[in-house]
Length: 286
Ligand code: KIV
Image 1 (tube, protein in one colour):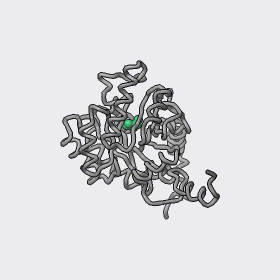
Image 2 (cartoon, rainbow, N blue to C red):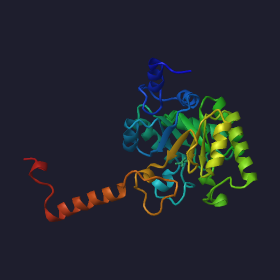
Image 3 (tube, rainbow, N blue to C red):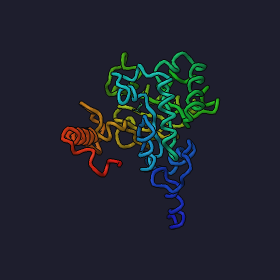
Image 4 (cartoon, rainbow, N blue to C red):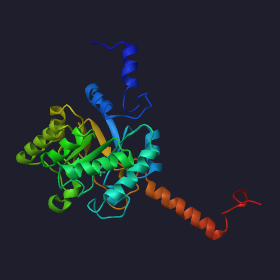
């Protein structure tokens, strides 16, 4: 069927990215985008100001990832991140955004004990920080947690493939390469969907496997190092903007060089202060 121009305009006005509506995005909008076959972007954020930039740029979903451990709080991994830290920074991101769906991560130790602990911490993120959804790692192993949180009225995003909270057992490497591991990933994705998850992050899995998972689910997949065929793509913002120091993962594309820009700005300020050029007359009061 060929769409008439008016219908096309209506459809594009609903788009998650580039659409016209300005109210906050919900998980229903995310589901509708999957039905339309729309691809959409997600970025992490850990503070209100950065989140407001992404919101104004039209990013429809912002993840307050536990990557804040490495990218914001100076830890070596995501493992030490606490619920207090997650709640504080999630609240900042919610305050900095008007339109984006804000997803708060449940950090390591916040849901592994079982469904009741998971619900308690998910509830905290909704009530104290105001997030619209939570994310947790694991498919079958987090099934009971996902079910109880969803049944209690909180949307859950599942995270499969490389799950950084398991770095001590899993390491950082591509997941799902063997037939057995691929079947397990597909089972996990279906289990997450059946438990009520509204989306599944696929981290560091072969592109063909991510494509197969995407085809087999009615909820969207969000890829990071999972090739081009997932419904959405997520990047850690400091990697995307070139702020992360040292080596960045191969799957990241760097869209700016903020580390250089900020460093240059800091040096220019320092030179001005040392040389007496700042503050000048226009920066002074009399
Ligand atoms: O914590 C995080 O930023 C994440 C993304 C990498 C998906 O989980």
